[in-house]
Length: 414
Ligand code: SF4
Image 1 (cartoon, protein in one colour):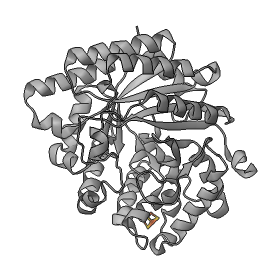
Image 2 (tube, helix red, strand yellow; image 1 turned 60 degrees about the horizontal axis):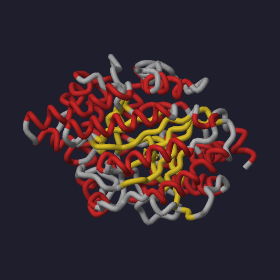
Image 3 (cartoon, helix red, strand yellow; image 1 turned 180 degrees about the horizontal axis):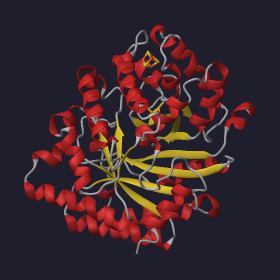
Image 4 (cartoon, protein in one colour; image 1 turned 90 degrees about the vertical axis):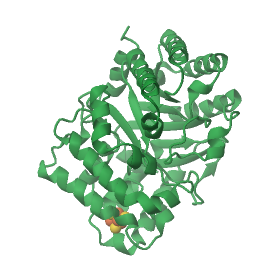
């Protein structure tokens, strides 16, 4: 354990609490099953309170925290009644009794922007008023459904965009989340999506490529098309860098550490796992890694893999065993042993993909895709803007600057 701690400089924590699964969308790349999305009783205040207590207990047990991002997902919080929403937001804000932790935490609530404009405005205003009253930063993470957007008429599109832009106006920023899948490729070209980002001055896109038992069959057919789509999209943004694409900074950092091997890599993985925790609705938790086409690659969720914990306390010590397992798993793959990206892949949770796709070769030609991104980066002498956040203009997280940025946007923008 000691050696893990020695590796920690400052912790940038990402903590997900699965709080609601109900959602009116049906993105083909969604992590949730259709029955979870249709479950209109998926939210429970008691479960949330318990999970918040686990979150605080865990965070307060850690040293050297630089920033905390608390995500409450994954369905549509705007489907809650005003009374439930108000009660929930008050409880979340009141749970931050430790000012030191509160002043490092940015909270994101997932929501779809589908709905009547007056309802969106009312609920957004309700959240903003309470959060501001408690001096707590709370943003809406908008899940964008391209199929709904492109297949409906002009009035629907106008309202959809107005709703997203209202989040942006109120919160000071908008973070657009897309769960990519076959519908994304079919309904929106890279250029159209790029243009949508520019036209609406959205400067952060959260791309999630979820591989779990709900999405495996789809990805067997469409992964190559998706690589092409992503590559074209990245190239459109690379020169001007007008918005951040979430997974590129993680990939960039993993490229930079690709020479770390063996026991040093295992020691590096420990803190990375500790900094990524997913707590599902029945309070079982999974550690995660940042990276491969998402900023959170789970070690277990919705698979039948081995690493999944149920406990009354999130145990740091489990990450030591888990790091070794991850390393050993990758080293058993005959293609990985000789691959120059093997250490990159370990850091971005690729073994989880291998688990789904089959253990004996490079899953779905990932190596070729990584190679193309690596070359893009190399052309610029590793000075691409992959690792620069266009909000803060910062390359690394220092002096709590992410929190300060968000605080300025959210609490001080009115
Ligand atoms: S790119 Fe493929 S072969 Fe290389 S380490 Fe990753 S999964 Fe293994």
